[in-house]
Image 1 (spheres, rainbow, N blue to C red):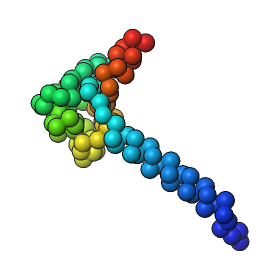
Image 2 (spheres, helix red, strand yellow; image 1 turned 180 degrees about the vertical axis):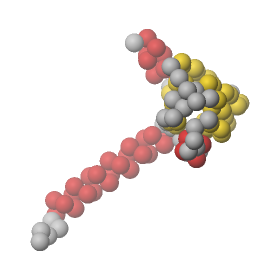
Image 3 (cartoon, helix red, strand yellow; image 1 turned 120 degrees about the vertical axis):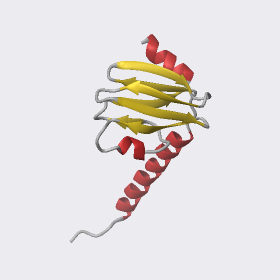
Length: 115
């Protein structure tokens, strides 16, 4: 039986710190544009304007809400509703309905369009 070594502890520590850094970076990252990909189309909304919006996915309507500079899906035509349960997160993906919602900086959104 192999024993737990110092290098095992260092590896676990590095993986843990990397996970914490990536999570914190994603959580605190601010954006200004909500980018919605739905059934092959791309839509953009301002993150600063609260509202309820609707897009048509592969299976039907997906309704999402922008509130307090955050976005979440409130209703979807998909069968399992995992995207609705995701709450205010980034990105939000509804695979059955082919809808992807991300929050981006305006510069990032422009660069993606320019490419």
